[in-house]
Length: 82
Image 1 (cartoon, helix red, strand yellow):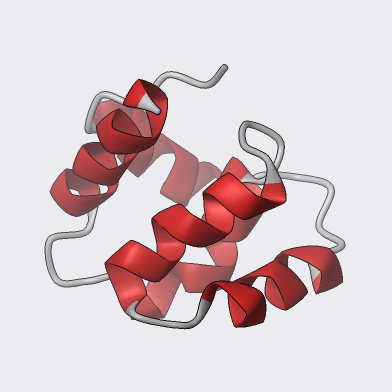
Image 2: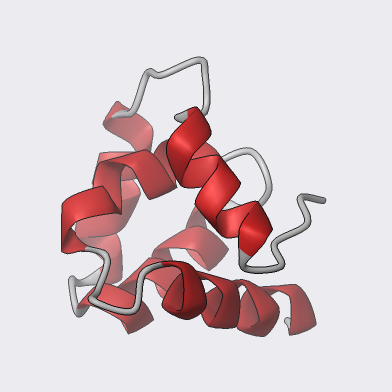
């Protein structure tokens, strides 16, 4: 649970204007570090979408690489992957 809270703070720091414009890229960056339920809860808290909608978006995401600019913004804000 601590990792979820720390990640929320990193995302807020990296994207203080909100995550709507990087929502899909965040899924690609974070989907391997969290369970679907935890990632859905985390993103739901940040963007207000229902967790079930986010879980569907996670399941539809077929990207195999993490967008380097988004990942770098997270790392610069203090994110450390699992």
